Image (cartoon, rainbow, N blue to C red; front, side, top):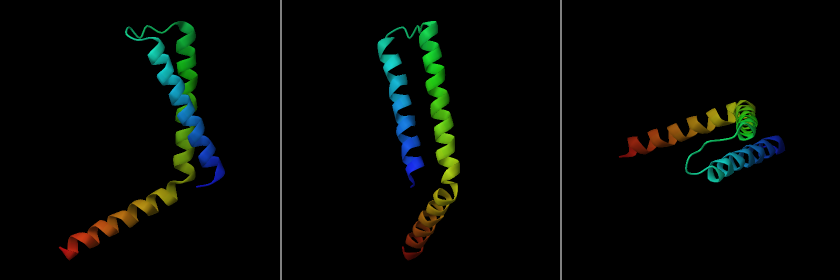
Length: 80
């Protein structure tokens, strides 16, 4: 993975941690204030954007890895 992917992954994880913190702070009723809802919206948008970019930037490598694993599993089934 390249540096952009690592940085996007870190940003996505940090945004999800922020979202988790909102939930913790609003337990047990999860009645978020208008300000909290705006923070939630921005963090979700950041996460969606970064995860989408990570997937698209690495799509070929991800698909190649998936195919390689499928071939490995198919080879193991044939040996049995």
